[in-house]
Amino acid sequence: MNHLFRLSAGLLRSGTAGLYRRRPVPEGHVSLVVARLFSSEPENSELGQLIKKDKVVVFIKGTPAQPMCGFSNAVVQILRMHGVDDYASYNVLEDQDLRQGVKNFSNWPTIPQVYFNGEFVGGCDILLQMHQNGDLVEELKKLGIHSALLDANKDEQKK
Image (cartoon, rainbow, N blue to C red; front, top):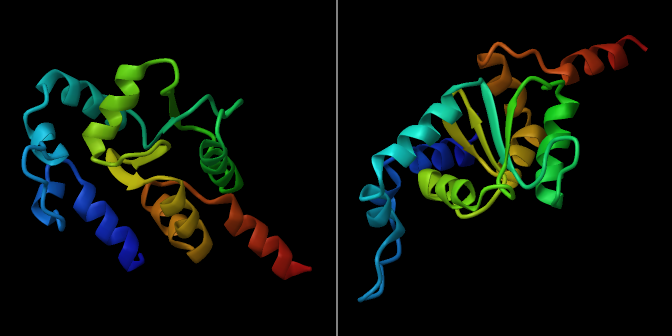
């Protein structure tokens, strides 16, 4: 697993990001981290249940069948290339509270967001990097998911 993934995942886990804030908050502003600590428990509890419900959970704009932005489409395509078809997907365009709630929950400002076994992985950029350097195959293996790219590589080597 590469350093960037470990750093991102470690810093962005629920409740830990505030410990690693590098820039001071301007006077008169409320830190998102502090605001998150005071956010309502039911919202965090409901989101916590959603992300733990399935091995792979994605919050995207649109649906896997019809992504409504390029980044969401990239996440769907990466998962598809690896043969990951059984995952929970939530369309944040249908529910603005969900859209903002998941951003607050992960302390990650953008959509899409990807979770493995209830842990925040990152957005499109992180998933793409994991795909490119092979870390995604290893992470899927930890989830008990066999990447279809492994089979494709074996077929190529036989030729």
